[in-house]
Length: 277
Image (cartoon, rainbow, N blue to C red; front, side):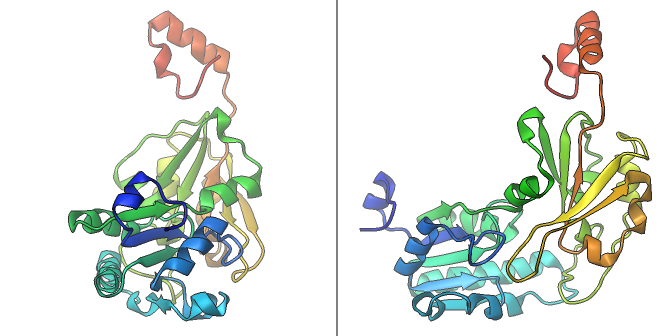
């Protein structure tokens, strides 16, 4: 009997698990994930082999690191396509297979999205197994409770799409280190030009608004790092501070009652860019 099975699993065996490895590997692996990994014939991962070697021998022997498929300075979507195809080939050869990827498998992971869509289109039973994501660890590092609102964007998509922000809510902007590029930059110190991102954010926040580049603790990359800057000074940040980080903008100071009253007077209460009351 498969672990943690539901009615669908009893009728159709799982062919492919999309499994989150957490942010700090392997200590963030859940008991559910470890049990599932033990039932798989093959574990494909985008983690380097040096990190997979931290697993117990019974799991390590089943691991295949697809890290070498991520070719430097190549279009990211092409790399992702090659990795997804390698996983699907493994599923065809020896199911069940686990695709083990950092964080949560469906939070900013193009390979997992491709596998979910392509796998189900091929008639495979694909099951998503949640993991600890960077959203969880970053909120812990900065001590922010999202009860008052939290917006999450990808840096390049935010600017290219001209997407609006709501200053009264906290905002997380993921992947600032890849801003403005569709190429893979894992091995080289490629520094993005953050000026267009800064200029977009200045449409909603004051230049003196303080924001932070946050990188969570992990067993392999080291202690957490939080680098605060005024928004107007965003481009002065160093490569080491931006690499692997997420940009956090805390809520701006807003008079919520005035915004509520203004909305009532104009009959557009919903126009206030944050919860009221």
